[in-house]
Each structure stands twice: as structure tokens, then as C-alpha cells.
Image (cartoon, rainbow, N blue to C red; front, side, top):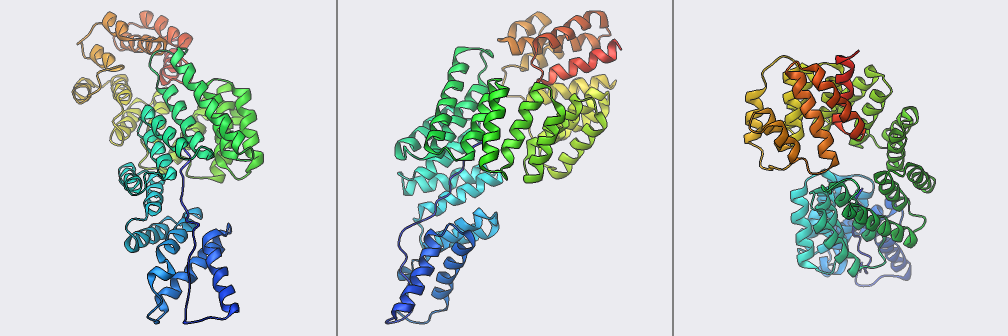
Length: 467
């Protein structure tokens, strides 16, 4: 969970509305100015900035200028305040106005970048953050947000360098360490050389070190404890993760993420009832947490309540119709239930939203298990795949471009080898060689993490083949 950083100017605004003013008028104007600049009450901040803006727009006195009122900062701060209360359209309008008045206002570009990141518009976010940095290379906020953007783009190594630069610019800023920890966590999760390899362990260690330092800077900050929970889940320390999540809950009871993460820890421990309760609470607090819906679907499926699982997946699609994972979750569920036509349709819908190579394999298997010839579709999918790393060798195997030994040899680590066992076993199922398929499907269950789709598919196939 990246921490995105907003900028709010805390410099001086000069507000004059006449050739002279009384002490009472001065005190009133100073109060308005301070509300816009420094008030932690967001409504008072908005009111203060609005009074400054309205005064400038309504005044007819020739010496009352934009410069004397410093309108760009008033628009910047009101935009910041609107973001804090989730009025993003109003915020964007104010930030653009601030830039119109002062084109070199780096903090306004930073905050526009924040809005773009929150909306998932990574391209626009990159442009705005680059502009902020080009105007003010020392603006740590912008470097931090750029780090978040790079994590979201899958550029974890680059993100670590960017966050490290933010740390050098602002070594006591908690969020710099939280975001760098998140980048290390993402890098550990993307490591392809084995689940227990030294590089992965070092990345987890670096992530935890950064998060712990962030907590030392801000012990009462719920975000750091929630991030610690995420790292510990990745390290399979579910007891420690639950403890960290509960600390975050105590510090900020209305923070949805710790409930989602504690639910994930419970789910990985096999306690589906506690997991569902936490997922429900997270959704209640923040209905826009996309992945929680998928986890709730998974929890119902693990509990054997397939009707509730299907209902949960349909709710996710209704809530997030453009989310590829929502369709993938329902497709996986349909495959495990034996609804192969429906699974193929959902995988097609997910592929139209995100061209993820594993979904190409799963669509092919769904079509084949439904009795259709998916070869032409898989051929098109394979020819359109640029990355020829794993699992591309599986596509080649299914298309007859590589034999089973060649496919198995292409698997470079334990995770890939467990997947290869499933895909070879599933190929044998399609050839009606059930006796040969069963040992490979059992091997999948013995060697694959329970979180893998292949594990769930193998489990379902074994139930169908040997009820």
C-alpha cells in the first residue's frame, strides 16, 4: 500500500482589502489567512481559502492584486483540502486554477499527480510528477509519489532508487520509508528465482527495516503498522501480522486496510469465518477496496459455500465492471464448479481488460474442458505474447511446439515446477488419460502454495475425476 503525498503550502499569505485597515480588520484577515494556511480542520481551511479567493475576485480596488493576495496558494490549499474530503473534481479544478495563476507552482503539479494516481491514470500522474520535479528538483513529496507510481508500474528497482532520493531530501519523513518498504516488498514478490532464495529474503528484510524505521519516527501512525502487517503476511508470519494489523486498528479504527489485511492473514491460516468478518468490515469502511471482494470470494470458496462465493464475485463485478481481476475471480470459481463455458467467457472478459498470459492458458483449458477446440484462440494468444518467459513454454507445449520434457525443463524454480505438473496433468485429462493425470494433479497439491490458482484447479479436477 503506497503512501501518496499531498503538498500544502504553509507560507505567508498577504491579504489587504483597503488603503488601511483597523486592528480588528487586521486580526480578522490574519485569522482567515491562518485558517487557509495552517488549520487542521479541513472545513475551516476550505472556508478560509474561499474567503481569500472571494475577496480577490470581488474587490475593485486597483491595488489589490493577485500577487498581494497570493491567490495561487489559496487555490492550492483549498484543492488540498478538497482532496482530504474526497472531493476530487473540485480539487482538480482548484489545482488547475493555481497553475494558471502561477505556472511554476510545483506543489500543484504534485497534487494533480496524486489525484491521477488515486484515479489509476498512471500516464497522467507521471507527466504531472515529472513537471513538479522539473520545477523543483528538491520537492521530496513529488519524488515520493513518483516512487509510488513506479511500484504501481511494476518498476520496483527503479522505485527503490526514487524513494531513496526522497529519503535523502527528507530523512525524517515517515512516508518516504513506508513507500520504499513497499517497493522492497513488491520486488520480493516479483523475485523469480525461488520462494526461499537469498535475494527475496534480503528484500523482505529491507522492507521490514524501512517499515520499522517509519514506525520509530511515528509510533502512533496507523499506516506504518498496517504496512508491517503486509510484510509479515508475505513472510508467512500470520500471528505477527495479525498483531501489527490490530495495532493499526487501535490507532485508527476507521482505517479499512488493516481489516482487509488481518482478514487475509486469517484466510491464509484457514480460518474462513474470521476472514469473511474482516473482509465485510473492510468493505463497510471503504467499499472501493477492489481486491477485498476477490478475497471474500476466495474465503467463501475455501469454506465450501459456493453459492455465497458466486454471489460475492458477482457483487465485485457489479461494483468494479472494468476490473480484470473481478472477472478472473468469477472465472476461477466457475472453473472449479465445472461451469467451463461461463469460465471461458469470464476469462475472455478479463483478457479484454488486462492481457495477462496466465489467463490465456486458463481460457484455453476452460474451452477445452467445455468440449470446444480452443487451439486457434490459443495460437492467436501465443503469437500476440511478447514475453517468452514462463509460462509461455506451457502455451508452446499445448500447441505442440514443445514436448512435455521441454516444458518441464523450462521451469526454473519450485513454483514454476509445481505449475508445470498441473499443466502436464491437465493436458493428460484432455487426452482422456486420467490414470496418468491423477498423480500429477496430486503432485500439484503437494508442491504448490494453496494461494496458487493451479492448486485450486487441481483440487477441483481431482474431485471430478475421483469423486
